[in-house]
Image 1 (spheres, rainbow, N blue to C red):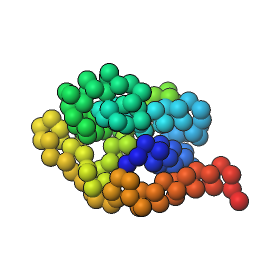
Image 2: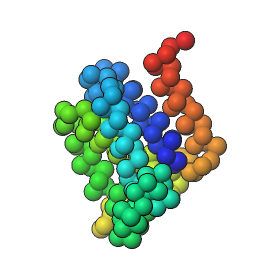
Image 3: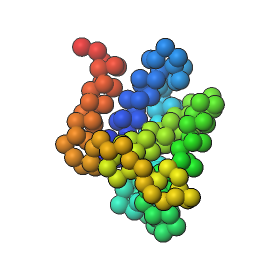
Image 4: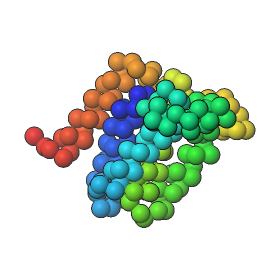
Length: 157
């Protein structure tokens, strides 16, 4: 998934959860939680030197990619499980948003044909629920749909 689709789907998810019957972003998606969601939605791709974040943190991205490869540790259950748990436990809005963004990124990549190694480092095989291919027309539709949802939520017609 492209960085802009990761960002918009994570924000759309946070907006949806803030309006749910049991709001997980109780104060709504304010500036602190929004900043956390945006950063978190890009953070797992720190393991790819060509990613939006990887290009901006090149030495760190090179190091992490050399150790774990792309979609290795940063896309695994070892990161996903604590991110979900922390999101549900932490009350600080930026950190909560950051953890939600990380979880949203990994779950979105789980839906790609490339999948994620949920059981890394014990098993490097990728798990996938193949819905879309990165850069495909369907990904563009997902991006447009999540963008429309955010805009219509905050600026209803």
